[in-house]
Length: 485
Length: 109
Image (tube, rainbow over all chains, first blue to last red; front, side, top):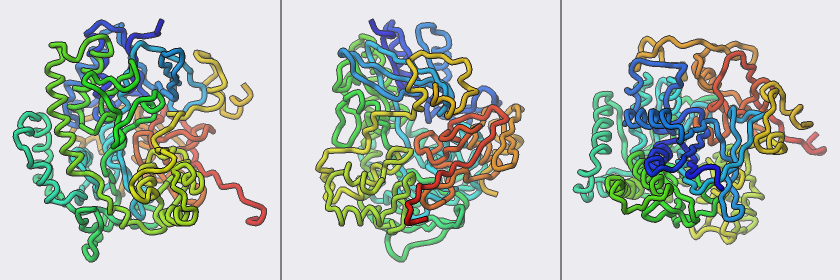
């Protein structure tokens, strides 16, 4: 007997849509969210301690989020746990067991729990992919997502004069968030060139007509750029960030079709912050731990009912492909419905199935237009940090590959220490693979940097205690005391 | 000036008054708003680095802002490895810069 009918990991758009959809079929639902607020990165918002007269100004489709919140609040058969960090998933007796630790982020005395469910829906989302650039470890360089999270969730402006660089339409809402926080965006440098953008964005215009919410949103961003006179430069990128203890300027250059910097086009732009966002990396560790199959481009493969290759495990949102909020909402609705016992062909899902088709075409457009070019490594210097945690530079990676002639990712990581630090390769993993995979055919050992059996940090003291152990003195005890428990 | 809080009077979302909190970092007291993370309070006061790396002794602060990169970890009330961008301040926290030196070999000494 499982603890709950449908267990959902992640309370962003996909997870919330899945939860309310599963409830319509009558299943009991529990949602586990690591952050202490629901809404995911898309609806990252101010906490209840900071009310404001016009917070919706910062958001898109905010009303949709309010509806989800009311649905969660009003429904005793739908539980949402925030501050619930899923740190491992294991198979036991043909059931999937989800191990979670609940409490203050990175705390010491959090409550451990082990949950079983008839169906599991993974809606873990994605994080920014930031390519290494000389100087990107300087304070003042953040991911595009960080700038937005700080602006929307904390009302912090990351800088006065901000350069935004990377690829993809996400750079637009980041620009808008920064402008609403009072920063001056001195330029948005989109690595994809104008011809490439035109080829993919202007093709098949009839498809765009059905994606009305997206097109209205994009039109709004163009308005922002025009009104704010914010330069948008396709075919340009930040190729170096300069400063001693903090960002003082960025070097921008024209990039060719493969994102190689074009010599002689470099210009220096004065700024005090740089936001990097070269696309997104899906958060796959839990899906991999559950045994879900991945596609060649490393997203979770799902069928028409959002079922993964593992029985009773479903996936929705960015881990099945980077598609934005509308696709995530549609996939979540379908996943929740089917996980609770419905069928993908049910009449209640007609709108969601249609939306999924429309927005997955939109997602392919984004992937084609803004795909990372193979020439980006040309802007690296031998001294450029690639792995930020273990401080492994580009020169070291190349030297180790040359000297060891290794074709296994695992041995290369162990020799260089790239990807073995605190973030466990979340930030550098794919860039390290790019640099070390000589022929683009992958590694002889079949290893990938996405596999992390321990998906979230858990302290040894917490691990040593049985699940559901409650210690009233938790918050006052320190790590060293905890070791003797 | 670079990083800062959006001045409430000029904020288009018209924030209501919020309770203040204070944290201590490197001997100074920094003021923020209840509901802000430790990273948020430091950034609001234009403190942009609060960790020193082990190998290069380089300054680090906020990077991913969503709890993925672990670049922003600090010690809070003596407990190390706490992501400053994810931990909300309750007020009164003693925050310390995190810097673990690498072990050295006898030759290096």
